Image (cartoon, rainbow, N blue to C red; front, side, top):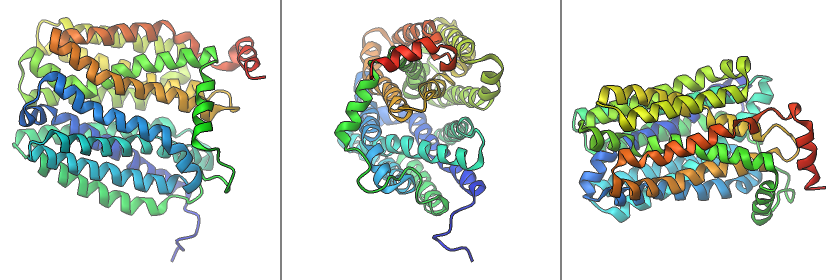
Length: 410
């Protein structure tokens, strides 16, 4: 019998991480698929729903900014367990709040959910990087692909729950129990030391934040951050608002809105699983530019399409275009091993700023101009991101820029 203290086989770790990466996507898409029902039950306006969704982004940003030091002290495995259980708890609390028609309870649940979600984002990627080194294979794109698989399954289950008129609390509780069982089973097979630093070696949180801020003095990092900001806004706006946009903008049913959101998630999943091959063949800059063009075309069809069929085609293009911006931006930020963690953390934070600011901003615009026209702001952000795609060019191809950036810290 294998000892609990023995080092797990790298292949087993990889397979467990496939599962664990999928769970946050499953939970988040399940929440999004029920947002029309949640809004109707709580009887809030579009702007009010934006503030409720804001709670997820706020919790996620807090988790992202604080999780690095916890991983350094406790290791990624411990943080994965705790953050996953926070996701489960927050999910159940949000369901209970919906059942009680209590906006404060829903917000508390979503803050807990978001805190676990943001913390898991860091811990899972640390563990994923360790798995790559152990197997000497590129695995992170596939891990993020399984996150998208989780969102696809969550969207499908959400549509099914809407179709059979399953109460939101029952839906969320069933999924929470399944996720808790999966986490409690899988975390034991992860190595104990991934991401853990020797006692006294980890920097305090304040200095870690200062290190992230210093990264913004590098021109390339700043431009990559803007790319990620625009593309994360494109991804997050669909995750937050797409079902409601289709319901309000095209007069479709909640069930149809959930199915159309599933198209977006399916396109994102396809883009992420094929993205590695496309990037290896064509390179970052052409791929990022092509993604921006696809997303702009898709969003234009959604905003100005004559009917829901044309808009659905646009949703597919939107999903394909938004699929690679965030992972490619993080990959570009980590080109230089020296200071890679701080750069990746800083760039990842810009993505969460999009998730933080985007929901209430689109809710405010949607309240005054309609959700479809509010998406014009997303269109502008994608255009800016696409115009800066050259900043993601691999660093070995611009040594002069690299030397200039390093000179800022010499």
